[in-house]
Length: 332
Image (tube, rainbow, N blue to C red; front, side, top):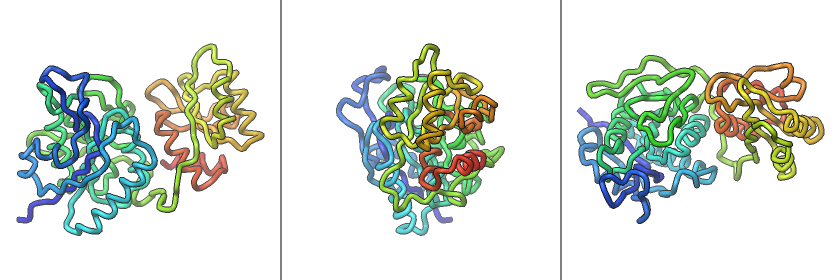
């Protein structure tokens, strides 16, 4: 029987870092990030699971990854699939800080229906009881499993498979940091099997993907974090900086303070700014309240602010109509 073939793309992060002591789990990577070949070589057991095709990519801290890296990553996935018709799926190694943003962006733009599993680590491979090796092995196991095909981009951390749209990092240091607050995981990778219990229903690539093949940059979209006593200065700065969209990370269940709302609603009326109403609460959906409707703000449902920013930026590549943007948020 043919052994499955999996491409592993390394982008850096804790899973690609080493420390100088097994108990050092906070300060590591001083000598740089390992490339994908070096990470794969640390775990030869991977070759028992699949034929591994390490793919070179930039190794950068996750907080430095944005549109140029995402665009190059999409091209790399496309070109790798075209050059390897026998490929069964992809595993992407990523730093956990912005892992959810890369996962969500890819889930809206990737061209392949083959499994794309993104994983990382909370502790470097050199640490005692590191999660790096098992996360990587379980990501490969998920990528070869037919149940994960056409499921959209999935995040594998701590034995759990999550939809890219729903998952978020909830703790700075704990191993169970990645959770989907409103929906829970889609399934699990245990010692004996990959088990999927449900599918995500919202729009996702490749069937409903945003085509960014000719896009040089994303429209500027900023996030306004709401807090008591804000005088609207940050909101005004975003408007003056030329933002085409703003995500209001409002008070739960989704309210923007008066001073900020006054600045943003004026820009909606006079400058064509598109404002979407999110919540800083960490879970739960925002809705079309009378307050938001009067201000011209669009609810984001249960997307967190950082993901609402990405969807709004992609939406603005298609339209500047508030009604059409609202439809896209209801669909995705």
